[in-house]
Image 1 (spheres, rainbow, N blue to C red):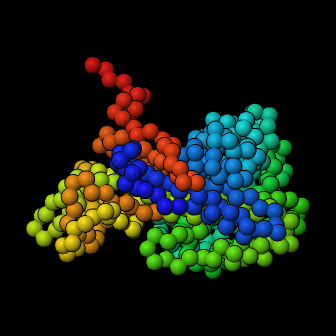
Image 2: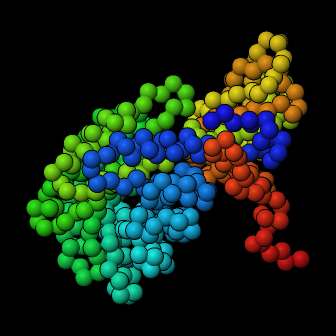
Image 3: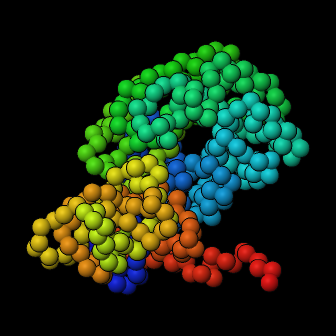
Length: 403
């Protein structure tokens, strides 16, 4: 759909996150259709964009939820996701979080260490409930992505090695309080090559065969997420080929394939609108200072990530010159783009930062006591606010000043 960013900025102010729900629907259906012909569950990775309206939108399409905190589990339940479609992952779960997940009767807890398994067993025994579990297996495959979002190598904190996984599955099968129903792997995010995924899928599929041979009935084959998107000029994995690779490797296993997309569904269905405050020149260095900052979108300063930048309705015909787009945060790392060719700007000009639908607002903070931006969703030609802009009172509500 065509979105009038200028009108939205006038109505709701800036900085402002805007999401295209029609785009998100298209992405979801593309992936779901790719897995047609087999049992499958698309479990939206809540950490990508955890707004309740976003989660609810995917839930209405039939999605489950991949959660990495009990807070995300509670968000998914609040947004209407069926409990039997919710997976609770993450390397560090407190006993109270485990208890809450068991009480919610979610599909499964995804375990990442032997110590965690023992804790889950202990809590389950204390609560008198059987814990359905999966184990995250580390296939030691190089995903060929940014090191901060690589998760499938021995040097990463995630998952367990195959021999350890086997021992854990055998232990779980013999435990009165554990039910090993699934297996999981996730080698990294923003994946743009199919070969590492194919290698990992085949390794894990062979492990499932060996487990089934000793009567450990794995029913859910969770391939994680990580499908890349275009930020700049990336070449992407073909969705059909991705699904066919997984279906081929698991065709004899009688499992439900679980896929956990996040960025793939939301990244390019979101934008951050920001207003130019003024320009500044230090020697030969030009800065365009805007009202959005690293607390709104931290990916550029955290990952040195590229986001396409668009200057709206600028009628200046002067030559474009290089500029850094920076925000008001008191940090030299507070930038949204570097060495970008832009014509001269004036106060009030609008800049749209693309691909901000994933890991934008969800990683935002109140650093420098800045309120987080408002969020707007557009669908079927209509737009609505789905989160209010934070004010000062919102930020200090839980604090106490002893004067």
